[in-house]
Amino acid sequence: MKKKLQWRHIPLTLVAVYALFPMYLLFINSFKTKTEIIKNPMGIPSEWTLENYVNAWQQGSYSVAYLNTFIITSVTVLLVCILSGLAAYALSHLNTPGKDIFLGYLFISMSLPVGFIPIFFMAVKLNLINTYWGVIVPYVGGGFAFNVFLLRAYMVGIPKELLESARVDGCGTLGAFFRIILPLSKPAFIIVAIFCALGTWNEFFLANAILQIEEVRTVSTQYLSFTSKYGTNWALLAASGVITVVPMIILFLMLTRKFISGLQEGGVKF
Amino acid sequence: MAITNSAVSSSQKVLVQEVKQKKKFKKGKWIGWLFILPGLLFHILAVSIPAIMSFYLPFTEWNGLNVPKFIGIANFIEAFQDSIVWTAFLNNVKWAIFWITIPIILAFFLAHLLRKVNKGQTLYQATYFSTSIITVTVAGQIWFWIYNPFSGVNFYLDKAGLDFLEWPGLTVPALALFSVLLADMWKGFGTNVIWLLASMTQMDSSLEEAAKMDGAGRFKVIWHVILPQLRPTLIIIILLTMLGSFGAFEMVYVMTNGGPAHATETLSTYYYTLSTTGRRAGYASAVALFQMFIAILIIIIYAYLRKKKGWEV
Image (cartoon, rainbow over all chains, first blue to last red; front, top):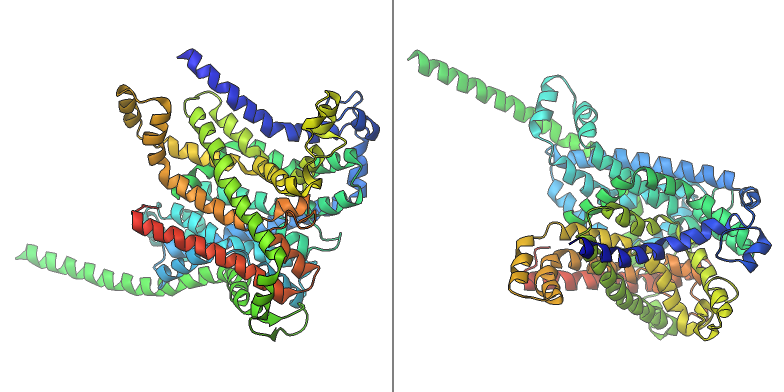
């Protein structure tokens, strides 16, 4: 039995190496000098240097890009949690008239592809190009249906009696949301928040079209313009690549179990 | 007598309370929409209006700035004669064929192996999913570099005298799409492993035991016992993979931008470039509508099969 368990680890580890090796490459090369990479593209650096990071941070104006991405990500996450949460509450615990039709409409809207061209030119017409709202609105609106379904599925499990007793205690409809629903469905909200943060931080499709100038660009789009500018300087590109992904890596390492369980639940729910 | 009296009065009380509650409920009812409305506003701006416009814009000539001019089906006629549209469509088909075979089969076997691993199961899952955390622009750049003829893998192949194995990757049109697909698979294979494993842990293990007792071999057990139980999950994975494949964009745009010579163009990259830099929003919308049409077709086929075969999902 013991022997049987061990051979499994060989293919599993091989695939783990396949997954981690490109990340190792990125990480290790960010500490090499430009000339060393040409001679030694995959090994450990003979001399560790932080110079690439300093240069990448300045030349890529990453302080601006970081601030932009942090603002866009946090506003999106906050709005998604509040707006989808309130809607899910109305669709699970308040006897909202027409809620079944509305849920059906949301379900259908979920299977439509992103209407990129209309969104882009609406942003042009509404003067939202190169503004944070130009991307925040489609992020929040685009994920609305899915997040409502996810949160609603969780809230349905909260017993109605709890809400009744809260009302007897003098809680308003909104008060009941903040005092009962929100704390009890915290696990679902955390999953929505982390996946929303990950998606927004890495989003490229819309951000690349709508955020056209360096002053408002997010890190993922900033990195692309950086690669087209310094296409041959791999040391610099590796360092800025690490800078781009490091906040999400930290989030993932801190909340690994949440990420995995969130995906598992999503899979089983379907 | 006294008992019935009190019973009546208490039931009356209940009735009065119920009426009161109903009134309160009615008031509470419409409040629900107040909670839905703010989010719905975002949804309408980002999904509903664009969806409606997606059906109108393909029939117009529009540079994105002036007023769209109605020109009938001229855009569609042009699109059908546009060889790039067909190249892009074929690339999407190839993308779908690749994704519903190799990465899903790989994910299945990984999940199957992981099922019996107790120690480190989460660690393996986290490792496989971790590639999805990497921003696509960075992931694309890493693979771009691995494929680089003067560095990365090819550097070592050269050194080892195995230069006939060299993978010129992105520069040769015939290999470019496959090279992009390999990078895309690296980035996205982990989610399927987690989904399949989650569904495997819910399987009825007694069936498997029984089949083994009857002397069924390893592959027979997989084919006749495990796969049928995974069918709901597999169907959903295949459906989502198909929809995703026909919308394939990011990895292509980042690595090749559709080149060389449109060899890796997909419908999404084509309409993206047409509308943002080409300023042909009307024609681009026609291409986008074609893509949307495929997505709807896939969903209709799925719904039809579901009804015909009596699938539960």
